[in-house]
Length: 110
Image (cartoon, rainbow, N blue to C red):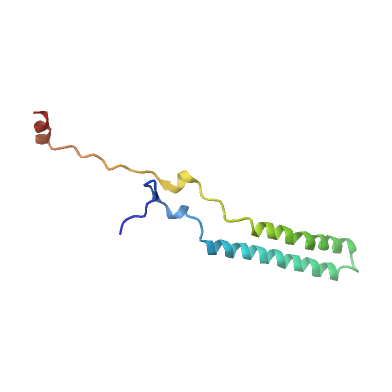
């Protein structure tokens, strides 16, 4: 089994690889669900606090209105940025040249 190489011939470092697509989707879903839980809490607090403090209730309603928009934008933002290219790939290291034996050099001079 040989080493995995990219098209340029360098060895790919596994630490520079992106996370898998399923992990990325799971993370975005988790962030969206947390934002929707906060939104639900804002709407519930707005209803509960409506008679106690209308200013706080209105702030909670505004949060309940704008949080879904922000959550959708964050969830659809796409995958994380790719790692920096120079640190991701190891450059090609040529094999050191072995000097020919002394008798081969003498034969070549003739």
